[in-house]
Length: 211
Ligand SMILES: Cc1cc2nc3c(=O)[nH]c(=O)nc-3n(C[C@H](O)[C@H](O)[C@H](O)COP(=O)(O)O)c2cc1C
Image (tube, rainbow, N blue to C red; front, top):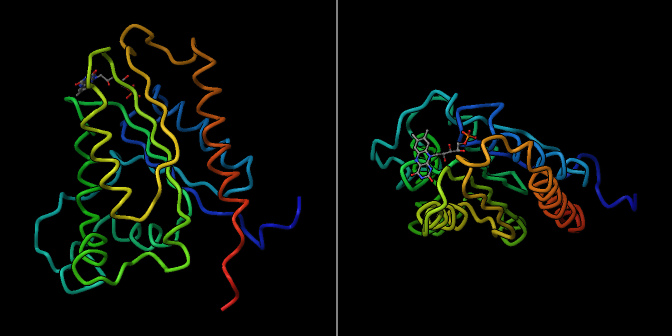
């Protein structure tokens, strides 16, 4: 309790790519978020398939502006993604990659891509650009070579676009055989520990200087 956190803890957002709030992926995410919370962070879970939004329509308004012109459930998420300190992405593999709704959310962060790489005025505040951390959790039904490759490539690109450094991964294949993740308490424990590590690393960071 060294008084490291002034006021509220560091903000961690958990993105769930599965439509099942009580499914296996959700169980791992909940454990990871619990770990981050136990490390002093403030956590929020977002069940992406339940959000109401359209895919990027390439209006490319974001080429010249800080905002996306589309107005939907992602509108209030953009400021949250400018402010967050930690991100935990947890998803099942669907058709060898990130499920469509979560992938569409990532595509809609083109507004961050344009700001960072085209206008060279990133949306993430300067003092946070080198300190934001991410964790990637994924589950696949089958145990086949390369089943996580597509998802990992997409997550790496997304983390780069929103200035989060990926510090951990938990990839669980063969879920069709395992069926219920609760029969593997060691995996739930591992998710908790990875969330705790992410949260602890964030909580250890010095608070940004007073403005
Ligand atoms: C539409 C759909 C596509 C899927 N595609 C794949 C796939 O390409 N490879 C694979 O290994 N598992 C695939 N799966 C299996 C899921 O990854 C697996 O069932 C996972 O455990 C679901 O997690 P959840 O219950 O937390 O949503 C697919 C499942 C669905 C529903």
